[in-house]
Length: 78
Image (tube, rainbow, N blue to C red; front, side):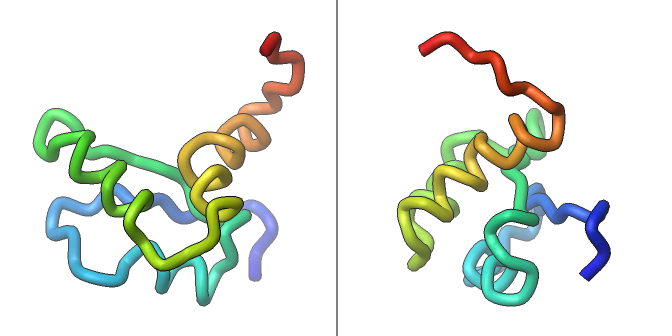
């Protein structure tokens, strides 16, 4: 695997099993959330992650933690 390559789920076709396949082959650390707005509903894209048969930790990474790491955002206030 190339250390600087990330995959994101933005896909207008939205084929079944995309999220779990990306996690299976690339690892959840390499998958980023994307919504393809305004062409696709963000609700649909979020649902693809939330209802994928992957762990909750994988879902958290995909829905935001990975992006924070890629952009170097480390000083968030809770």
